[in-house]
Image (cartoon, rainbow, N blue to C red; front, side, top):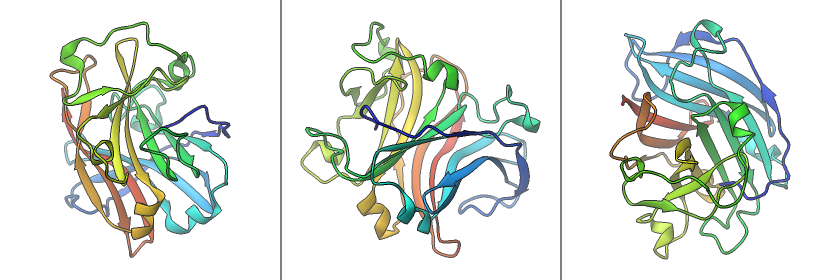
Length: 253
């Protein structure tokens, strides 16, 4: 979650390419398409989409080396990565409606009062274009969200954050019931439209190098057709010494 970041904005586009997928729980016939890659801390971070044998997207995510964390700045910083596109065409998303990813590093956590007031790294998978995102104004949301589009057990956590939307949080999450924040998902909405689905994790949890997959509660309907995740995953690959944030088990709606 981002709160009035003084951030470094870096956008990198790259032509996608294909190679056999080595992600856990992927079938031998799945394929990973790499999107953008850019400097991140002491190394780099890359975006990707996994598709099955029929070309249907099953996961979207970002991956980075563990040692990259040591080189992250001591101030709030934001990075932007485009997701790969079909045949490298910028106008053809591989995992619509997901267009790009914003990675936010908050070394001091969100300002109190907040359940996210510890160091954390989060990834917003945006369902709108970068241009639309940068046009969103902060403050009270003038639009209303129809009840069928409200995810189960979720409610808006404050006003719209500029260039993001209003964060809708799961009211049943442990961090809202007296427990420490480890990992979470959030939805984003702006003027009645979904803007992102976020996977976030505390730095303390990352340091445990523990794999976690959580359920993303669903709305009754989605306003925009596309592939939406049933789960989110924060994982560590001990062999590659890499962390991955992903939205998984994509289903067409």
